[in-house]
Length: 168
Image 1: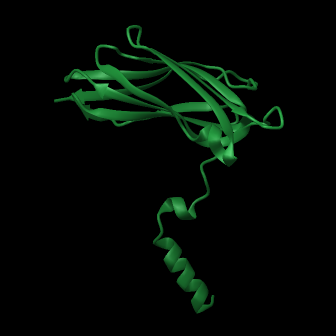
Image 2: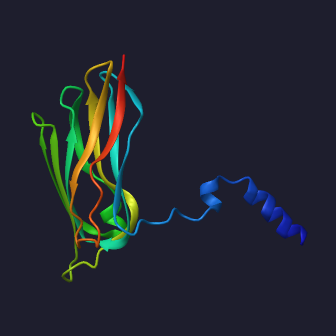
Image 3: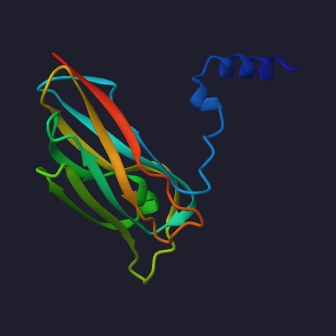
């Protein structure tokens, strides 16, 4: 082994694993998961990201999300980066029913030339900012329904839940 090759190996060994490791494999059937803090303080705002991983190219995704109205208040609902990959143009709609603890979301990729072939990969679909209301509780975030377009061969596994402890 040359001195240059040995130096490269030594340098690579010190890099974070994400730099030298291959990307996480994409799910064959679209899969969704929550990314949120494990614990927040009452009165604090925090963001929860619903992440999507899909080997299959997708053009759109309607979602039904749920949250506990006694412990959480929705502040904002914004589109994530997943469907915007490769300079994708999207239409994003959301509606919050605060009394029922539901959020209806739809996102669709559009193409100037007609039907978009879709996008695959991994990334955030929606970012919900919540305000934690009540200390001493565990708030639950839920994905209740997801219907990717085009429909995959197997249904998307739901519900997908994430618990967040609310402390003083």
